Amino acid sequence: MKNSRRHFLQQIAASAATLPFLSAYDAFGNSNFSASNLHPIIPQGPTLRVALMGLGGYASRVAEAMQSCKRAKITGLISGTPAKLDDWGARFAVPEKSRYNYENFDAIKDNPDIDAVYVITPNALHHDQAIRVAKAGKHVICEKPMALNAREGQEMVDACSRAGVKLLVGYRMHFEPKTVEVVRMRAAGEFGKIKFFQGLSGFRIGDPSQWRLNKQLAGGGAMMDIGIYAINGARYMVGEEPIWVTAQETKTDPVKFKEGVDETILFQLGFPSGAVASCLSTYNMNNLDRFFLNGEKGFAELQPSTGYGPIKGRTNNGELTQPHVTHQTLQMDRMAGIILDGDTPLIPVDGQEGLKDLKIIDAIYRACATGTKEELNLG
Ligand code: NAD
Image (cartoon, rainbow, N blue to C red):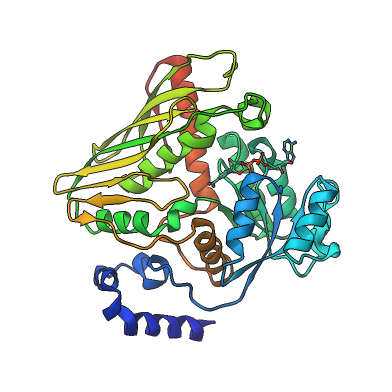
Protein backbone atom coordinates (compact mmCIF):
# COMPACT_ATOMS: atom_id res chain seq x y z
CA MET A 1 0.00 0.00 0.00
CA LYS A 2 2.81 2.39 0.97
CA ASN A 3 4.39 1.64 -2.41
CA SER A 4 1.25 2.43 -4.37
CA ARG A 5 0.92 5.64 -2.42
CA ARG A 6 4.50 6.64 -3.17
CA HIS A 7 3.89 5.72 -6.78
CA PHE A 8 0.84 7.98 -6.83
CA LEU A 9 2.76 10.89 -5.34
CA GLN A 10 5.48 10.39 -7.95
CA GLN A 11 2.83 10.38 -10.67
CA ILE A 12 1.37 13.60 -9.28
CA ALA A 13 4.78 15.25 -9.16
CA ALA A 14 5.41 14.18 -12.76
CA SER A 15 2.13 15.59 -13.94
CA ALA A 16 2.35 18.84 -11.97
CA ALA A 17 3.41 20.73 -15.08
CA THR A 18 0.07 20.02 -16.71
CA LEU A 19 -1.90 20.77 -13.54
CA PRO A 20 -0.91 24.31 -12.63
CA PHE A 21 -2.68 24.48 -9.27
CA LEU A 22 -0.65 21.59 -7.90
CA SER A 23 2.56 23.55 -7.67
CA ALA A 24 0.87 25.91 -5.25
CA TYR A 25 -0.21 22.97 -3.14
CA ASP A 26 3.28 21.53 -3.09
CA ALA A 27 4.73 24.90 -2.16
CA PHE A 28 2.48 25.11 0.86
CA GLY A 29 4.60 22.58 2.67
CA ASN A 30 2.03 21.57 5.27
CA SER A 31 1.60 17.83 5.72
CA ASN A 32 -2.18 18.29 5.76
CA PHE A 33 -1.86 19.72 2.28
CA SER A 34 -0.30 16.67 0.65
CA ALA A 35 -1.18 16.05 -2.98
CA SER A 36 -3.35 13.10 -2.00
CA ASN A 37 -5.90 15.17 -0.10
CA LEU A 38 -6.04 18.08 -2.50
CA HIS A 39 -6.34 16.49 -5.86
CA PRO A 40 -9.38 14.69 -7.23
CA ILE A 41 -7.24 11.89 -8.74
CA ILE A 42 -7.74 8.90 -6.49
CA PRO A 43 -4.64 6.94 -5.50
CA GLN A 44 -4.75 3.22 -6.11
CA GLY A 45 -5.47 0.97 -3.18
CA PRO A 46 -7.87 -1.58 -1.79
CA THR A 47 -11.61 -1.23 -2.31
CA LEU A 48 -13.94 -0.11 0.48
CA ARG A 49 -16.92 -2.49 0.47
CA VAL A 50 -19.98 -0.58 1.57
CA ALA A 51 -23.50 -1.58 2.61
CA LEU A 52 -26.07 1.15 2.05
CA MET A 53 -28.70 1.51 4.78
CA GLY A 54 -31.96 3.29 3.88
CA LEU A 55 -32.68 3.06 0.16
CA GLY A 56 -34.36 6.45 -0.33
CA GLY A 57 -33.72 9.56 -2.37
CA TYR A 58 -30.20 10.38 -1.28
CA ALA A 59 -29.09 6.74 -1.21
CA SER A 60 -30.13 6.52 -4.90
CA ARG A 61 -27.83 9.43 -5.69
CA VAL A 62 -24.99 7.88 -3.71
CA ALA A 63 -25.50 4.48 -5.35
CA GLU A 64 -25.40 5.96 -8.86
CA ALA A 65 -22.31 8.04 -8.02
CA MET A 66 -20.57 5.00 -6.57
CA GLN A 67 -20.75 3.31 -9.98
CA SER A 68 -17.88 5.63 -10.99
CA CYS A 69 -15.81 5.06 -7.84
CA LYS A 70 -12.32 3.67 -8.16
CA ARG A 71 -12.03 2.54 -4.56
CA ALA A 72 -15.54 2.07 -3.18
CA LYS A 73 -18.17 -0.48 -4.09
CA ILE A 74 -21.69 -1.39 -2.95
CA THR A 75 -21.54 -4.88 -1.45
CA GLY A 76 -24.52 -4.80 0.91
CA LEU A 77 -28.02 -3.36 1.24
CA ILE A 78 -30.23 -2.70 4.27
CA SER A 79 -33.88 -1.77 3.82
CA GLY A 80 -37.29 -2.38 5.39
CA THR A 81 -38.85 -2.91 1.95
CA PRO A 82 -38.24 -6.40 0.45
CA ALA A 83 -39.08 -5.20 -3.07
CA LYS A 84 -36.36 -2.53 -2.86
CA LEU A 85 -33.84 -5.12 -1.72
CA ASP A 86 -34.70 -7.24 -4.77
CA ASP A 87 -34.62 -4.31 -7.14
CA TRP A 88 -31.41 -2.69 -5.84
CA GLY A 89 -29.82 -6.10 -5.34
CA ALA A 90 -30.30 -6.89 -9.02
CA ARG A 91 -29.25 -3.40 -10.18
CA PHE A 92 -26.06 -3.24 -8.14
CA ALA A 93 -25.19 -6.96 -8.16
CA VAL A 94 -25.55 -7.42 -4.41
CA PRO A 95 -26.21 -11.10 -3.66
CA GLU A 96 -29.12 -12.14 -1.44
CA LYS A 97 -26.79 -13.15 1.40
CA SER A 98 -25.71 -9.50 1.71
CA ARG A 99 -29.21 -8.02 1.81
CA TYR A 100 -30.65 -7.22 5.25
CA ASN A 101 -33.62 -5.57 6.91
CA TYR A 102 -33.72 -3.34 10.01
CA GLU A 103 -34.40 -6.32 12.28
CA ASN A 104 -31.57 -8.59 11.20
CA PHE A 105 -28.77 -6.28 10.05
CA ASP A 106 -26.66 -6.96 13.18
CA ALA A 107 -25.72 -10.15 11.29
CA ILE A 108 -23.42 -8.08 9.05
CA LYS A 109 -20.85 -8.82 11.72
CA ASP A 110 -20.46 -12.25 10.10
CA ASN A 111 -20.32 -10.90 6.55
CA PRO A 112 -16.72 -10.68 5.36
CA ASP A 113 -17.77 -8.80 2.21
CA ILE A 114 -18.78 -5.64 4.09
CA ASP A 115 -16.25 -3.17 5.57
CA ALA A 116 -18.55 -0.22 6.28
CA VAL A 117 -22.22 0.73 6.43
CA TYR A 118 -23.43 4.06 5.05
CA VAL A 119 -26.44 5.17 7.15
CA ILE A 120 -28.77 7.23 4.91
CA THR A 121 -31.99 7.11 6.89
CA PRO A 122 -34.04 9.93 8.52
CA ASN A 123 -32.00 11.84 11.12
CA ALA A 124 -33.62 10.39 14.23
CA LEU A 125 -32.55 6.87 13.27
CA HIS A 126 -28.84 7.60 12.81
CA HIS A 127 -27.87 7.25 16.48
CA ASP A 128 -29.21 3.75 17.16
CA GLN A 129 -28.36 2.43 13.71
CA ALA A 130 -24.78 3.71 13.81
CA ILE A 131 -24.24 2.18 17.23
CA ARG A 132 -25.58 -1.19 16.04
CA VAL A 133 -23.24 -1.03 13.04
CA ALA A 134 -20.30 -0.27 15.33
CA LYS A 135 -21.23 -3.17 17.60
CA ALA A 136 -21.21 -5.40 14.52
CA GLY A 137 -17.58 -4.35 14.04
CA LYS A 138 -18.10 -2.38 10.81
CA HIS A 139 -17.00 1.18 10.06
CA VAL A 140 -19.78 3.76 10.06
CA ILE A 141 -20.39 6.41 7.45
CA CYS A 142 -23.37 8.47 8.61
CA GLU A 143 -25.34 11.13 6.82
CA LYS A 144 -25.63 14.64 8.20
CA PRO A 145 -26.81 15.66 10.69
CA MET A 146 -24.89 12.89 12.42
CA ALA A 147 -27.55 12.75 15.17
CA LEU A 148 -30.29 14.86 16.75
CA ASN A 149 -28.10 16.50 19.38
CA ALA A 150 -24.62 16.52 20.90
CA ARG A 151 -25.47 13.94 23.57
CA GLU A 152 -26.44 11.42 20.90
CA GLY A 153 -23.43 12.39 18.80
CA GLN A 154 -21.06 11.82 21.72
CA GLU A 155 -22.59 8.37 22.32
CA MET A 156 -21.95 7.48 18.68
CA VAL A 157 -18.35 8.68 18.87
CA ASP A 158 -17.83 6.65 22.06
CA ALA A 159 -19.46 3.52 20.63
CA CYS A 160 -17.29 3.61 17.51
CA SER A 161 -14.20 4.25 19.54
CA ARG A 162 -15.01 1.32 21.87
CA ALA A 163 -15.63 -0.95 18.88
CA GLY A 164 -12.40 0.16 17.18
CA VAL A 165 -14.20 1.30 14.03
CA LYS A 166 -14.13 4.63 12.24
CA LEU A 167 -17.05 7.04 12.25
CA LEU A 168 -17.28 9.39 9.25
CA VAL A 169 -19.98 11.90 8.35
CA GLY A 170 -21.23 12.42 4.79
CA TYR A 171 -19.79 15.93 4.50
CA ARG A 172 -19.35 15.76 0.72
CA MET A 173 -18.27 19.44 0.41
CA HIS A 174 -15.08 18.64 2.32
CA PHE A 175 -13.71 16.98 -0.81
CA GLU A 176 -15.18 19.33 -3.44
CA PRO A 177 -12.32 20.84 -5.45
CA LYS A 178 -13.34 24.54 -5.45
CA THR A 179 -14.18 24.42 -1.75
CA VAL A 180 -10.86 22.76 -1.03
CA GLU A 181 -9.04 25.41 -3.08
CA VAL A 182 -10.65 28.26 -1.10
CA VAL A 183 -9.72 26.53 2.17
CA ARG A 184 -6.17 26.07 0.92
CA MET A 185 -5.92 29.74 -0.08
CA ARG A 186 -7.30 30.88 3.27
CA ALA A 187 -4.93 28.62 5.20
CA ALA A 188 -2.01 29.86 3.09
CA GLY A 189 -2.86 33.42 4.14
CA GLU A 190 -3.86 34.52 0.63
CA PHE A 191 -6.94 36.39 1.91
CA GLY A 192 -5.04 37.90 4.84
CA LYS A 193 -6.58 37.95 8.30
CA ILE A 194 -10.15 36.63 8.06
CA LYS A 195 -12.75 39.09 9.32
CA PHE A 196 -16.16 37.91 8.12
CA PHE A 197 -18.12 34.96 6.73
CA GLN A 198 -21.65 34.92 5.40
CA GLY A 199 -23.48 31.61 4.88
CA LEU A 200 -26.93 31.51 3.30
CA SER A 201 -28.48 28.03 3.19
CA GLY A 202 -32.06 27.35 2.32
CA PHE A 203 -34.75 26.21 -0.05
CA ARG A 204 -38.56 26.13 -0.11
CA ILE A 205 -39.61 22.74 1.14
CA GLY A 206 -42.59 21.03 -0.52
CA ASP A 207 -44.77 18.16 0.73
CA PRO A 208 -45.85 19.02 4.30
CA SER A 209 -46.22 15.33 5.21
CA GLN A 210 -42.56 14.39 4.65
CA TRP A 211 -40.35 13.23 7.54
CA ARG A 212 -38.21 16.40 7.26
CA LEU A 213 -41.15 18.33 8.76
CA ASN A 214 -41.76 15.77 11.51
CA LYS A 215 -39.92 16.72 14.71
CA GLN A 216 -39.74 13.08 15.85
CA LEU A 217 -37.87 11.96 12.72
CA ALA A 218 -36.01 15.14 11.74
CA GLY A 219 -35.11 16.47 15.19
CA GLY A 220 -35.95 20.01 14.08
CA GLY A 221 -36.50 21.77 10.80
CA ALA A 222 -34.35 23.59 8.26
CA MET A 223 -31.40 23.87 10.67
CA MET A 224 -30.97 20.07 10.89
CA ASP A 225 -31.20 19.66 7.14
CA ILE A 226 -29.78 22.68 5.33
CA GLY A 227 -28.72 25.20 7.99
CA ILE A 228 -26.03 22.74 9.05
CA TYR A 229 -24.22 23.59 5.79
CA ALA A 230 -23.83 27.22 6.88
CA ILE A 231 -22.61 26.11 10.34
CA ASN A 232 -20.14 23.63 8.92
CA GLY A 233 -19.10 26.03 6.14
CA ALA A 234 -18.47 28.84 8.61
CA ARG A 235 -16.03 26.58 10.45
CA TYR A 236 -14.05 25.38 7.41
CA MET A 237 -14.11 28.68 5.57
CA VAL A 238 -12.99 30.77 8.58
CA GLY A 239 -10.67 28.00 9.79
CA GLU A 240 -11.44 28.45 13.48
CA GLU A 241 -13.92 27.01 15.97
CA PRO A 242 -16.58 29.52 17.06
CA ILE A 243 -16.69 30.56 20.74
CA TRP A 244 -20.17 32.08 20.86
CA VAL A 245 -23.44 32.06 18.97
CA THR A 246 -26.57 34.22 18.93
CA ALA A 247 -29.72 33.25 17.01
CA GLN A 248 -33.20 34.46 16.18
CA GLU A 249 -36.08 32.39 14.81
CA THR A 250 -38.93 33.58 12.64
CA LYS A 251 -41.94 31.54 11.51
CA THR A 252 -44.48 32.62 8.89
CA ASP A 253 -46.30 29.28 8.53
CA PRO A 254 -46.94 27.60 11.90
CA VAL A 255 -49.21 25.02 10.28
CA LYS A 256 -46.52 23.62 8.01
CA PHE A 257 -43.69 24.26 10.50
CA LYS A 258 -45.05 22.92 13.76
CA GLU A 259 -43.66 23.32 17.27
CA GLY A 260 -40.00 22.28 17.26
CA VAL A 261 -39.69 22.43 13.44
CA ASP A 262 -37.78 25.58 12.55
CA GLU A 263 -38.67 27.41 9.36
CA THR A 264 -36.13 30.27 9.38
CA ILE A 265 -33.27 30.97 11.78
CA LEU A 266 -30.73 33.78 11.55
CA PHE A 267 -27.58 33.13 13.54
CA GLN A 268 -24.27 34.78 14.22
CA LEU A 269 -21.00 33.17 15.27
CA GLY A 270 -17.94 34.72 16.90
CA PHE A 271 -14.44 33.28 16.52
CA PRO A 272 -11.34 33.60 18.76
CA SER A 273 -9.54 35.86 16.26
CA GLY A 274 -12.41 38.33 16.34
CA ALA A 275 -13.83 37.15 13.00
CA VAL A 276 -17.63 36.99 12.90
CA ALA A 277 -20.15 35.07 10.79
CA SER A 278 -23.71 35.91 9.84
CA CYS A 279 -25.85 33.03 8.59
CA LEU A 280 -29.35 32.19 7.47
CA SER A 281 -31.05 28.79 7.55
CA THR A 282 -34.48 28.46 5.98
CA TYR A 283 -37.07 26.11 4.50
CA ASN A 284 -39.00 29.01 3.05
CA MET A 285 -36.82 30.79 0.45
CA ASN A 286 -35.32 29.62 -2.80
CA ASN A 287 -32.03 30.58 -4.50
CA LEU A 288 -30.23 30.62 -1.20
CA ASP A 289 -26.94 28.76 -1.43
CA ARG A 290 -24.11 31.22 -0.98
CA PHE A 291 -20.86 31.47 1.01
CA PHE A 292 -18.84 34.67 1.22
CA LEU A 293 -15.51 34.92 3.04
CA ASN A 294 -13.84 38.25 3.59
CA GLY A 295 -10.26 38.87 4.68
CA GLU A 296 -7.99 41.89 4.94
CA LYS A 297 -6.29 41.07 1.62
CA GLY A 298 -9.01 39.33 -0.36
CA PHE A 299 -12.28 37.44 -0.55
CA ALA A 300 -13.89 34.24 -1.77
CA GLU A 301 -17.42 33.78 -2.97
CA LEU A 302 -19.09 30.42 -3.69
CA GLN A 303 -22.55 30.41 -5.29
CA PRO A 304 -23.87 27.78 -5.40
CA SER A 305 -21.79 26.72 -2.44
CA THR A 306 -23.18 23.38 -1.25
CA GLY A 307 -25.65 22.11 -3.87
CA TYR A 308 -24.80 19.02 -5.91
CA GLY A 309 -22.89 21.20 -8.31
CA PRO A 310 -21.19 22.28 -10.30
CA ILE A 311 -20.13 24.66 -7.54
CA LYS A 312 -19.24 28.08 -8.90
CA GLY A 313 -17.03 30.67 -7.32
CA ARG A 314 -14.43 33.35 -7.51
CA THR A 315 -11.87 34.99 -5.34
CA ASN A 316 -10.10 38.34 -5.56
CA ASN A 317 -7.72 36.46 -7.91
CA GLY A 318 -10.51 35.58 -10.35
CA GLU A 319 -12.77 32.68 -11.24
CA LEU A 320 -12.25 29.29 -9.59
CA THR A 321 -11.63 26.79 -12.37
CA GLN A 322 -11.15 23.46 -10.59
CA PRO A 323 -13.13 20.78 -12.45
CA HIS A 324 -16.48 19.51 -11.19
CA VAL A 325 -16.37 15.95 -9.93
CA THR A 326 -19.57 14.21 -8.79
CA HIS A 327 -19.45 14.94 -5.08
CA GLN A 328 -20.52 11.53 -3.85
CA THR A 329 -18.06 9.72 -6.12
CA LEU A 330 -15.15 11.74 -4.81
CA GLN A 331 -16.41 11.48 -1.23
CA MET A 332 -16.63 7.70 -1.28
CA ASP A 333 -13.24 7.27 -2.96
CA ARG A 334 -11.68 9.61 -0.40
CA MET A 335 -13.43 7.84 2.45
CA ALA A 336 -11.91 4.58 1.23
CA GLY A 337 -8.50 6.22 1.66
CA ILE A 338 -9.42 7.51 5.14
CA ILE A 339 -10.75 4.16 6.34
CA LEU A 340 -8.37 1.77 4.64
CA ASP A 341 -5.14 3.78 4.35
CA GLY A 342 -5.49 6.15 7.32
CA ASP A 343 -5.49 9.23 5.06
CA THR A 344 -6.11 12.61 6.68
CA PRO A 345 -8.48 14.81 4.68
CA LEU A 346 -7.80 18.53 4.49
CA ILE A 347 -11.17 19.23 6.18
CA PRO A 348 -12.04 16.51 8.71
CA VAL A 349 -15.09 14.29 8.21
CA ASP A 350 -14.86 12.27 11.41
CA GLY A 351 -17.29 11.90 14.29
CA GLN A 352 -15.69 14.77 16.22
CA GLU A 353 -16.40 17.04 13.26
CA GLY A 354 -20.04 15.94 13.23
CA LEU A 355 -20.22 16.42 17.01
CA LYS A 356 -18.97 20.01 16.79
CA ASP A 357 -21.80 20.91 14.41
CA LEU A 358 -24.31 19.25 16.75
CA LYS A 359 -22.98 21.26 19.72
CA ILE A 360 -23.50 24.42 17.68
CA ILE A 361 -27.01 23.33 16.65
CA ASP A 362 -27.90 22.67 20.32
CA ALA A 363 -26.62 26.15 21.21
CA ILE A 364 -28.52 27.77 18.32
CA TYR A 365 -31.79 26.24 19.50
CA ARG A 366 -31.02 27.38 23.08
CA ALA A 367 -30.18 30.88 21.84
CA CYS A 368 -33.47 31.04 19.89
CA ALA A 369 -35.38 30.04 23.02
CA THR A 370 -33.59 32.34 25.49
CA GLY A 371 -32.57 35.24 23.26
CA THR A 372 -29.18 35.23 24.94
CA LYS A 373 -25.65 34.76 23.66
CA GLU A 374 -24.51 31.15 24.09
CA GLU A 375 -20.87 30.38 24.81
CA LEU A 376 -19.43 27.48 22.79
CA ASN A 377 -16.67 25.16 23.93
CA LEU A 378 -15.85 22.90 21.01
CA GLY A 379 -12.52 21.76 22.45
P1 NAD B 1 -35.65 9.82 1.96
O1 NAD B 1 -36.94 10.02 2.65
O2 NAD B 1 -35.59 9.99 0.48
O3 NAD B 1 -35.06 8.38 2.30
C1 NAD B 1 -35.06 7.86 3.60
C2 NAD B 1 -35.08 6.34 3.55
O4 NAD B 1 -35.11 5.84 4.89
C3 NAD B 1 -36.31 5.79 2.82
O5 NAD B 1 -35.89 4.76 1.94
C4 NAD B 1 -37.16 5.23 3.92
O6 NAD B 1 -37.93 4.12 3.52
C5 NAD B 1 -36.10 4.82 4.94
N1 NAD B 1 -36.61 4.69 6.30
C6 NAD B 1 -36.22 3.74 7.16
N2 NAD B 1 -36.87 3.84 8.31
C7 NAD B 1 -37.72 4.88 8.19
C8 NAD B 1 -38.65 5.47 9.05
N3 NAD B 1 -38.85 5.02 10.30
N4 NAD B 1 -39.33 6.55 8.61
C9 NAD B 1 -39.13 7.06 7.38
N5 NAD B 1 -38.23 6.51 6.51
C10 NAD B 1 -37.54 5.44 6.92
O7 NAD B 1 -34.62 10.80 2.68
P2 NAD B 1 -33.21 11.25 2.10
O8 NAD B 1 -33.33 12.53 1.41
O9 NAD B 1 -32.57 10.10 1.41
O10 NAD B 1 -32.42 11.57 3.48
C11 NAD B 1 -31.82 10.54 4.27
C12 NAD B 1 -30.64 11.13 5.07
O11 NAD B 1 -29.68 11.64 4.13
C13 NAD B 1 -31.01 12.30 5.96
O12 NAD B 1 -30.27 12.24 7.16
C14 NAD B 1 -30.59 13.52 5.17
O13 NAD B 1 -30.23 14.64 5.98
C15 NAD B 1 -29.40 12.99 4.41
N6 NAD B 1 -29.16 13.69 3.14
C16 NAD B 1 -27.92 14.16 2.87
C17 NAD B 1 -27.67 14.80 1.69
C18 NAD B 1 -26.28 15.30 1.37
O14 NAD B 1 -26.11 16.01 0.39
N7 NAD B 1 -25.28 14.91 2.14
C19 NAD B 1 -28.69 15.00 0.78
C20 NAD B 1 -29.96 14.50 1.06
C21 NAD B 1 -30.18 13.83 2.26
